Image (spheres, one colour):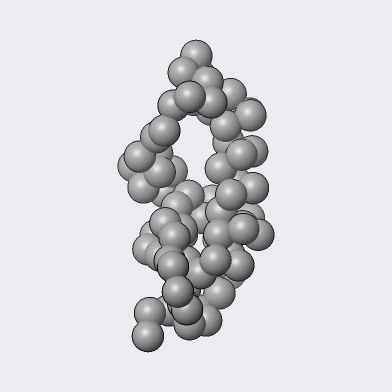
Length: 75
């Protein structure tokens, strides 16, 4: 069974791209609670410049999940 890159729980059913929160795949719950709100914040913050909401970025290349402060592992 695959493990969620965000909560480390098992992934049942469909998996999702966890970027920009983490590298790898995540469960439906983490996608809804963490990934989608983060992507929406990024889209509405103007991070994509003049490309607006119609732009579908390569999330893995756009943001290094390890640098995302909200989800940075404690040291």
